[in-house]
Length: 128
Image 1 (spheres, rainbow, N blue to C red):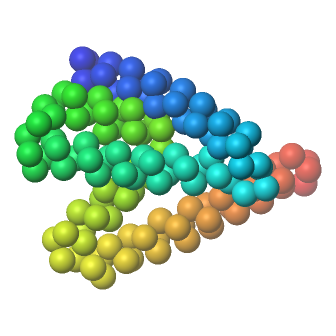
Image 2: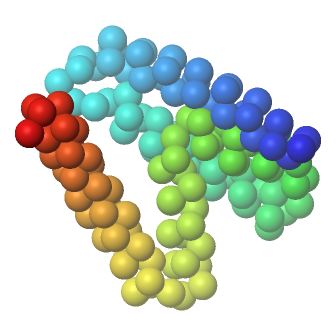
Image 3: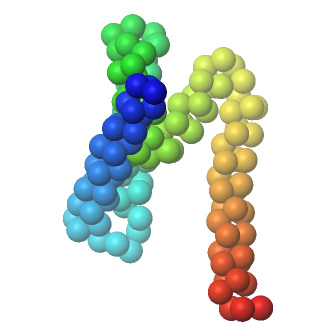
């Protein structure tokens, strides 16, 4: 249960940080392009790389703190950071084809799922 609470607490912090960074980016650079989302995805990917290296390779971050930071805070900040870490892990193991397939399946799959959700919601809301 304590691991669950660590993830929940971190997720709350990450979600709040995402809102603040996204709001700042929109105010600073405009809303014609999703600068806020791009910013949190890039920053989150950078930070999860640091967290996971320090935790798994160096041993400087213990399992509970790594869970709080990587799954909780970074998960709340952006789920893209986990996707990036998993893709990098495949590449580091020399599984470049699998890494590329994962990227393609994630990007295209998310787009198709989003279109399907939009179409379903449109269909249901039209009463047809």
